[in-house]
Amino acid sequence: MITVAIKALNEEAHIAAAIESALQAVAPFDGVVVLADSGSTDRTTEIAQNYPITILRLADPEQRCCGAGAQLAFQGVATPWFYLMDGDMVLEADFLAPGLAYLQANPGCAGVGGRVIETVLANAEFRIRNAAMAREPHRREGLVDRLDGGGLYRTDAIRSVGYFADANLVSYEEFELAARLHAAGWSLARIDRPAVSHAGYTEGGYTLMYRRFVSRRMDGAGAVLRAALARPHFGRVLRRLAPLRVTAIVALWWVLLVAAMWSGRDGLVVALLVVPLAFLTLRRGSLALGVYSFCQWNLTALGTLRGLLVPQRNPANGIAATLLKRGPTPVGMTSAPVEP
Image (cartoon, rainbow, N blue to C red):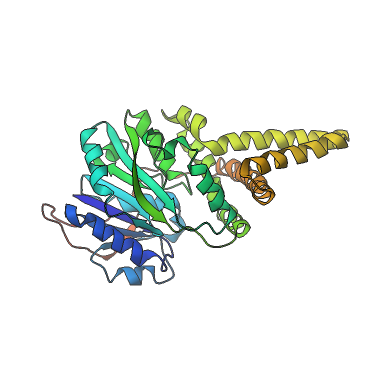
């Protein structure tokens, strides 16, 4: 039996397709679908009421973040297998069977993912992300260090490391989970099968970047590093979380730029401004994307440093939720999954 959980916030345009794809995918496994809503103010939960699923809503809107939504989706799971997806995704109907077969054949593997297909490339961020996906090792078939974009997990493996997602995290919650799993001796894998299609955002790249900065989504890497302090997965976080390297590079660049300006070395100031832009332009393939990356790197560094300073709640505490609808109970289960 499998639970497919959908975490969502204001996804009225996509939620019906997400739910329908999840219901189709779990049908051969007598599975269940759970919607974990983070307090939508649109018609997301109203639309979801039309389907035979369990609907949970975050009780305290002040706790709203990616980590809280993911943990809410997981914490009441009563099936041995768990798939997490976003409300703007469509789950491929034929992914769960090979994913489940891989996990059953590899008992030391905690989770398996597939290919994430980006269907909307309307802004700079998603064009950069789509190009990067071809280069990133964790997007390729085989053993990987994380399952960005959702995956099928072994419930017992998640329970063994305490919780699915740290409710303090505004982003990088799947990376943080992977770091804890690896530190506990589990592996993760990706198979060469489409898993989900992702609609993404259609708003402009700079608008999206600004919104993510003011909403503190860009603080995620700093919060992950702070949460890992004095824990077994600290070294893995330090080595593998890319925004930390970006922050170190940008912080050094800031120091050099201020020093050059302070000393009146105008030629060095110009070089320090031109070289990063030229590098990013060559790397991204266009001046427009290079300038976008330059701005994003600087805001990422600011957000990461800000995230290091934010006090954190105990991530082992449960997420308070309101049960809006109880879905059907599969054969062999005494009740549908609900909040604790």
